[in-house]
Image (cartoon, rainbow, N blue to C red):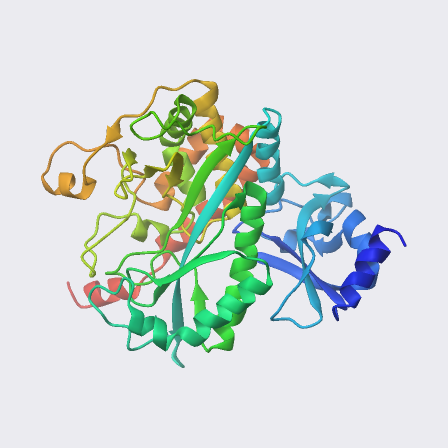
Length: 443
């Protein structure tokens, strides 16, 4: 038997009859279709076909050889889905006209990773998925799914974990079956908010794994009568959800390039230069790491009902300092900007491009913040620069940062800016309930 026949036989022995060919659109939302297992060679070598203009952000036309989007199955990614009996999940790359599609975000990340592979380096990424469990009533009103989750300071609330243990344990079983190495599950700092942590991986696998995590979480939450929400800030007076990236580089011998045990922050000169690149391009990175109107409700200097806010609004590096945008911890960097609404492939690609720019230009080490920046702000003293305060400002920063857009890819950034500018315009033209309540009878 050839490679494909062997794989087909292996999967059929596990009861598999179909493949879920999964990719993501520009927004980072999983898309795909079911195809028969028996045609595996076609799905790998040619790809499953989709109408290109029907997918957000491809930039493909309605006719011609490049109107069709082909999702090519990555053979080593095939694995059974516990919540879809008889179906194997497959990660796919986007192609059009027989060429890698430059607006496919997974291809965008792979191009950045090729840059460090040429240097003999590997990027390792640990992500911290935070999310809300919500429920929608018959009138369309949204609320947290657990009506008893009402503590003023709900972090690590064990009673909420007990009440929601059926969901959490179902997640444990599902993720374990999918090969995740779980590390912890906890109730986060907002009512209805949770975090599930799992082991880090090399960058492309980490991005693939996060897409699979979300696919699983949506299925498990629906099974338990609630909605898994990656909305950055669904509750006005509570903390929002982040998707922090823990970043480290290793060389060909497995040595940690960012780490220097003799340094006060345990960072090497390369680690500091990478950090400087992130802070230099932070405004433009905000558009890709915090890509929704709602993202900036999280990135705000607002009071939190829990008494604590971790919003990383100031462009600063700190030693285990969670009030900074960039936190140094144990010889690695925690990039605290991304939220769970981001396209993780694009966010990681841009983050890597910015850090490499810092390394290539040998940017000087940023000043290290050694205090609580929120307390400093309350005292009214001078502060580090702030991130953009809304999506439009972030999009303007991205459009102006040609170094970053050229590195990430002009085609992808053009599509991203067009779609997200329209999103901002739609928001700006909408009349909200807040406006009606405030102004309808006011004048």
